[in-house]
Image (cartoon, rainbow, N blue to C red; front, side):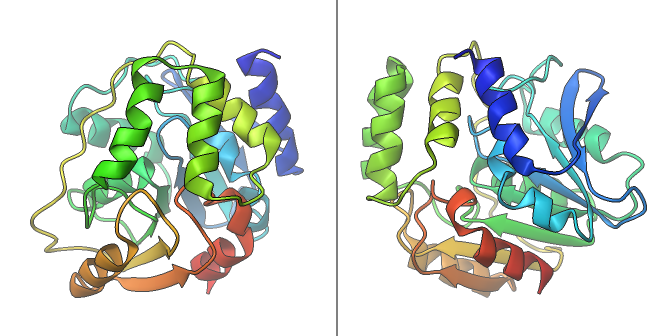
Length: 257
């Protein structure tokens, strides 16, 4: 199966009508009523927009959902990849242009992109799902485990890494297959995340913490997020990579509560 076939197959699991926008080379999957409040979903690095298959359809009951693929990452966008933090902010500004006060949601690297944007551009509400490099750095053990996969990508290495981090949770095979194929796609190096030192001006922010995350120290993330004024919701059974797919109930309840 090709990457495109795997992408389309997982997107079909959204099980709602999905429109496809091309915003100057950024591919955006869109669903939900056209007059509903907008929500923008940013996937983690390499995960691609279809990873929201268990969340987007439920949000689309009351929201207009926009899920873009980050240029330069695995996905269907063809726009020039962001090279700097300013490029990322400008890119997301373009995606959100014309949306009426959108709710911005990101997972993992997508959470860092969302937070970086929100600290520079006013947003109504922000949700960070097990955010990396926002309140705490990555664990050295996580980086060490990921390094062979990054240096010499293969489907087997990628799948083994995800299964290690998710610790026996029933990862959907079609999502795992898409992510593994995505690791073989030609991509560019992502903008290196830098943890913000000044969270002054943080908008109303919800932080979902995966209590079984191997990516970072969940308790440190929770404590620092609360110290910054964010509302923290723990997802006890979740690992970093099992979100958002395996815990849609917890994610949707937190986002809509």
